[in-house]
Image (cartoon, rainbow, N blue to C red):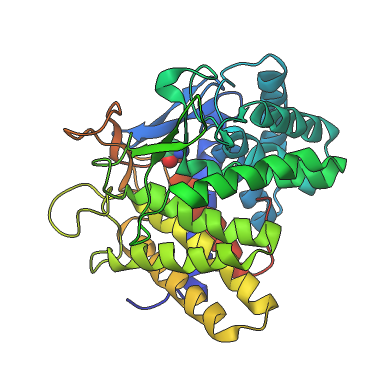
Length: 386
Ligand code: GLY
């Protein structure tokens, strides 16, 4: 696979911004659903774990185009996010980072908006309140302490940057301490000897000891759900950047190698990495997430003057992006589809998992967002809000 070049990067960004502009009437006063159904995102209320991604796309579109229309729409979303956290609407889960980092930390960084800052700090408090001392982890889902939900999931690594940000904003070390303790638990338990990872991990409610890995959205407990592995790649790159602990970067390399080894020739991962050929659906969003992780880590290596590694991960990111550009990117003149990237998979039912099937071989909101983030990162002047 060759690397995405600068002309293709700009073409992809302009193309994405064209689709976003066309979608503005549908999602300025409503949110975008988790995934498309037959190519179209339904407008929904602000209740899903994914609704931060569309405002994130708006901020990226604004930064690239400097067109205030995108900032205007994104600021309307900030008010919706502020109301959501103030009224605790669908906030009884850990996805505060996915929700508030691209929608509100971004708005604070770009526009200095005080409401955005307030909302993101309330979201960080909500996340910290899900920390379980017994086992030292942030409980992902459900009622706190419930027997069937005494677990964390690998995805949570992307919620933690909200806590590092909150510590910097307030000077309160507690946010960082929770992030560090959760990360330590995750690193100790979630990875197998081949550096594939479990999607979810149960802890013992009475003793806090590790109990077992399980899957929800992967094929089976001991396979590697592609997006889980992708969250681990990006999560370890971010954990390193926020802590300076070399062990996270070492783990980043190992989980990345596992991901790359399992890719089919066209470099678009199957929805679970147990599949390496055949007709199973793909999850293009995992490729975009990994590209973001590689570009983040490349910056870290560059700062340490480890130029060979920086080059390697930047090159791999550009190859993943070229694969998406060639086989998954929606063209702005395509009809009957209003997402940015095809061939994403939200949740695919298997005989061994517990998810409800949704968004198989569709556009997914985070797939669109991380594609744009990767394109902006590659441009070299985007300041991360993660
Ligand atoms: N964080 C949920 C997912 O990746 O589907």
